[in-house]
Amino acid sequence: MEEKDELVHPHYQQGFNEGYLVTEHWPEISDTIAQVNVSNPALRLEGFRDGRRQYVRELTKSNRPKWMNRDITKTPSSDHDKSKDIDR
Image (cartoon, rainbow, N blue to C red; front, top):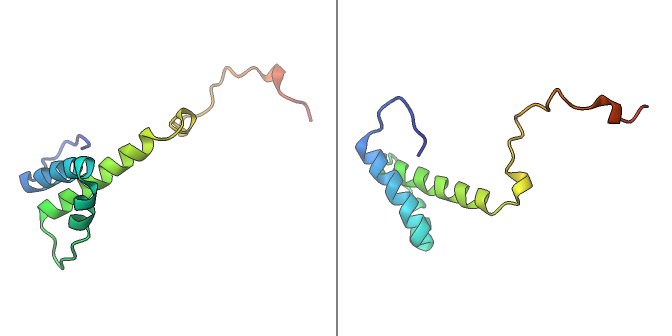
């Protein structure tokens, strides 16, 4: 779970941790729980769903090739040798 300056409600945090662990060890059960439809979900269920999403996101990222995990938000370095560029 991402660190934030604000406090997280204990029920949400408990649900998040449970969602993460249940998804890791029992993904079928996690799918069933996450698909429960309620008109006003409790904080614990919201946390469960977010914990499940976090685990799936991390699992997907760890299965990518290394070149796909690099940070694409970084700008190219300014020390690029322009003499190697192709003239048009």
